[in-house]
Image (tube, rainbow, N blue to C red; front, side):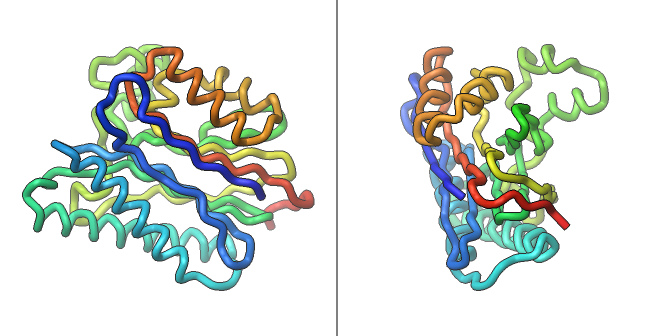
Length: 250
C-alpha cells in the first residue's frame, strides 16, 4: 500500500482547523485519518489535533494483524475513547467549551478496509473506474436526503448545510459508524474534509483519481482545484492506494 496525507488552509480562513495523518503499522497495515475541527477561538484546532494524536497513540500500541472483526472492534472502542478524552478536556478548559471535530478513520490491510465515521467528513472508494461514497454524512441535510425530503442538488445549496448531527467531543458518548469492505489491486481509498467535497463534485474527484498519477500529484491537483473553485474552507485529504496482489475479503 501507498499512502499520502495533505492539508491546506484554503484561500479565506485565518488558520487551519483540519488535521489528520497516514501511519503504517509494524506489520504493514495502515491507518488513515481526517479530522475537521470546530469551536470558538482556536478550539477547533485543539479538537482535531487531539483526535489525531490520540488515534495515533492508540494505533502505535498495536502489534499483529487485525481480522475484519478485530478492526471494527478496535475502531469502535478507540474512537469512543478519544471522544471521551476530548469531551473531558473541553469540560475542564473553559476556552475550549463546545469544541468538537469530525473524524473519519480507515484501517487498511491487503484484504480489506475497515472505516469509521463521525460527522460529515467522507470516506470514498475508487474501484473499477467508479468512485463511490462509503460513509454517510451525519449532517442535517444528509439526513433529509436519506429521508427523501431533499435531493442531492438541493442539499448542496441548503442554508443549513453545515449543521452536524454528530461530532466527536461534544457529548460524553457518541454513536460511531463502522463498516468493512473488501478492496483489490489498483483501488484507491480517499478520506477528506468537506473543504474538498463542497468545492468538487464526485465526478471531479473521480476524474483526478482516474488519471492514475502518483498519489502526491492527485492530492495536489484536488487541493488546487478546490482552491480554484473558491477555497473558502480548509481542504484535507488522505489517500491510500492498494498496490499488492489481488485478494478478496473472506
